[in-house]
Image 1 (cartoon, helix red, strand yellow):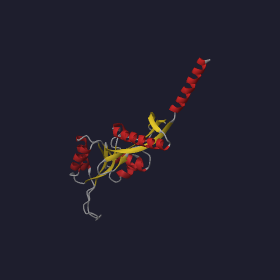
Image 2 (cartoon, one colour):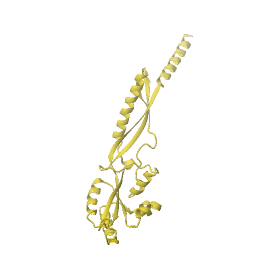
Image 3 (cartoon, helix red, strand yellow):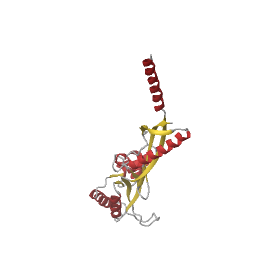
Image 4 (cartoon, helix red, strand yellow):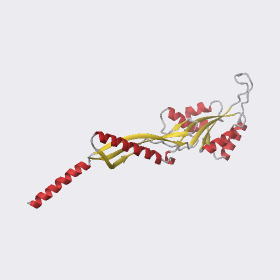
Length: 230
């Protein structure tokens, strides 16, 4: 009889401790880090601005020579490129190709490449450039700093909520990273203009911005469940 009571008491205590150990609190936090762009998309156009706003002035209309110079230079320095029509395709390709089908979208893959090559491009007559977008490839981003920020924020938030409930936070029970919270990369070199318009239309997951420092904000979010202890 005594043995039976002892076993029953142990089972009861184990059940109580198991129930207590499953008490938990879940928090979700979000933040961003800034990283240098992996892709700097630039539109290269050929225009003769002679005469300014005097549209009656005679202007150069054949830019095949300049186009050859530009593409030769881009190839020499390993800069992926496409014509605007090829890069965009369809209606947007026709719009951006416009009356000048030689317009180019160049995808610079480093700041050094961008600075060095762009300066030389500007020395070619009739060449004009416009920066379109800065993007990152999600798989190339070191997110150690981002996760460190998120973990610290989550612990701080959980500690505050637990304290208000008269409890303390214990070890981490579970970490979940919601899908679709990080930057999606550009898989197509020279797709900058397409990404630019897709982003405007809300049809792209690519994280891209146009900033003077060529940095991109990479977002992140995690949900962490902590054990609660008395």
